[in-house]
Amino acid sequence: LSKEKQAAFLSLHYAQSKAASHAPPFLGICFTNAFGLGGNGRGSGLFEVASRFNHSCLPNAHHVWKEEREVMELIATSDISEGEEINISYLTTSEFFHPHKARQRILEERYGFRCDCGACAGPEVQARDRRREQISRLNDGVGGGILIAMNPARAMKFCRQVIELMTLESVEGKLPRVYFDAFQLAIAYGHQARASVVMKVHRRLRRLFEGDDAFDMTPEMNALVEEPQSHSVF
Image (cartoon, rainbow, N blue to C red; front, side, top):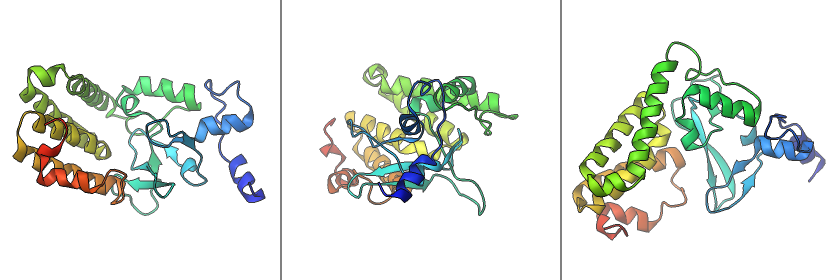
C-alpha cells in the first residue's frame, strides 16, 4: 500500500469490542470495518469511504457489492435531506428485526457502542419492537416451507403483512426479498398472472435499491416478468 493508503487504513475506527479484544490492532480494524462481499464465501473487504459510515437501526442507505466492477456502492433507501447524516445498518437481516435490547447487546459486543437512533430510543421504541418481532415471525413462517406447502394462501397473506409492516417501519430497502418470496409462492401454485405482476414490482425495487447493474438483473431474470413459468419452482 502507498503511504496515503496506509494512513487511510490506520485512521479507520478500531472498536476494541469484546469480539476484537484479543486481536492485534491491524486485525481489530478489519473486524470493526470489513464488509462481506456478497454470499457464496466471496470474503470481506475494507473500503476507504464506505467503511466510515455510522450505524442506525433506521438507516437511510445500504451497501451493495458490485462484483463485476469490484466496487462497493452506497445507495439511498429513503429521501435524504441536504446536511442529513447518511447511515447504514451494521446488523444482519435477521438481527435487524430483533427487539432493540437484543440489537443493543449485539452492537455493544461487536462494535463497542449502543445505538440511540429512533428505533432504539424515544417514544416509538415499543411500537417498533412489536412491528419488528412480528416481521421476524412472519418471515420465519414463510421461509420455513411448511406453511407454503400446507396453506399457500395464508403464506401469501403473511407476505402482504410483512410488506405493510416494513413500510410502516420505514425499512423499504428490505422489500425486494419479500416480493421475490411472494413471486416464488405465486408461481409454485400456478398463479402466473399474479407472479408476473409481483416480479415487475420486485424488479423495480431491485433497480431502485441496488441499481440497474445489480448482479442478477440478467435477461433470464427479466424474462420472468413475461414468462414466470420459466422459473425452476414452476
